[in-house]
Image (cartoon, rainbow, N blue to C red; front, side, top):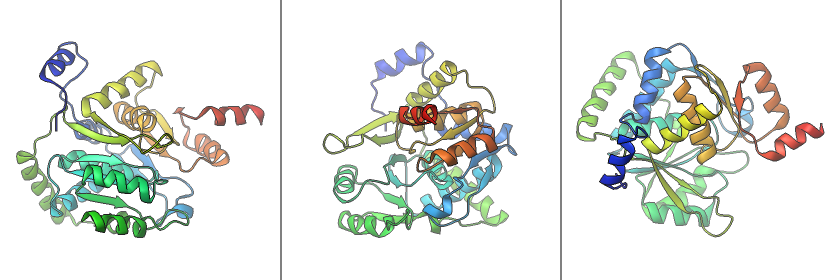
Length: 298
């Protein structure tokens, strides 16, 4: 889905602002260059939030997970420009889902885990997504059960990430890679295609959807790289929900642009953040002003 006019695409391309690299291209470049570098680190307190122990994942292992998720998307009938809504905390599966959407040609629409009935009703009615991906529970909330009730009304299929670990054998992985390559022939992705639909917080009425392309996110990530002097292999700690400009443009894309390590954190816990910064040797993070003020007060 391309919403920018031909004139705007031509102008931004001629100025060197927009290129041809998609999110999946960017990721696969890192897989080729740094296969054994740690790509993702789960939150330390993952077990307190959802099912599953925290994981440390290399680029090679992350690519395998993305391939498995993409294969499942294809089997579920996802094609180019289909929308996949993601209601996930900051866990490695959320990153896998965003990358798998790019690989299959779908549009990822991440929403806050805080969203409930009326917000989800409006979003799903507006988007008519192909899939709704979430976790069984987040803390004391049964996200899957809540979402399933709404999705059934809109005839949307729900997918639980706890069920996504296919652990394909090597031969099955080869079959999946072949299926993905064939799928991409008829679902070719362009850097000017829509990559995500993100949502405003809804504090002043219902949330509003904002489309952004691969090129637009790439510009945001590169701008932060240059402005913050991000270096190759930097360790970036992300404590913001992976649903908005700060986390996706400032954290997610910047991480892939520098081929670094993405340390996930959720929800904000000052003591745990400081432990992660020290242990993981974090070189860059983004925090709300209240966090900085609390550090100064302590």
